[in-house]
Length: 226
Image (spheres, rainbow, N blue to C red):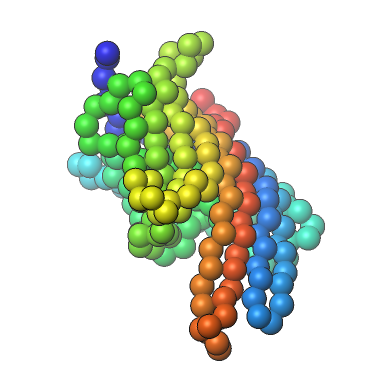
């Protein structure tokens, strides 16, 4: 079976524009009360190579437009015109240089490839990292599904998010998704992710009690310029 080696390319890259839609809700339960934070945002962003090295590049990300649910406080919305910078290597490992992701859920928008070539049906696991590059308790399993039958330049991947290492017996599935990667441009064409998980932490004033968050997100991203 044919194997494919996937890498991002940083050379001669024009500005890439995307539409991103994020919908869902974050619920928080604590000893002092509970609240719900709705999420309903549609954005237009652009990515531009700032500088490149042999195997990595600095990429500027600009928020060009934001339309949001009226229930979301203005201070919680991405700022129009805000620029963030991420460093990414050819495998798709991302580190936000200023320590702040460009938008909520940005860590799910760039998929990560293995070092070795893969065939359709093969999968690999990667630990999700936060905006500062710190390891999180979540892992993503990527499965190469093959090439799109109508658009042969698009490689398709299925994803599944886990709370904990997927090979661990206590790991729980926390979401599914898909990616399309343009093998000619060597960049993400589109992606869609459904995420749902619960996370508990000790209540600072009384560690015997907990703060529990329940997150549900649907994230879509698609390329808008060619």
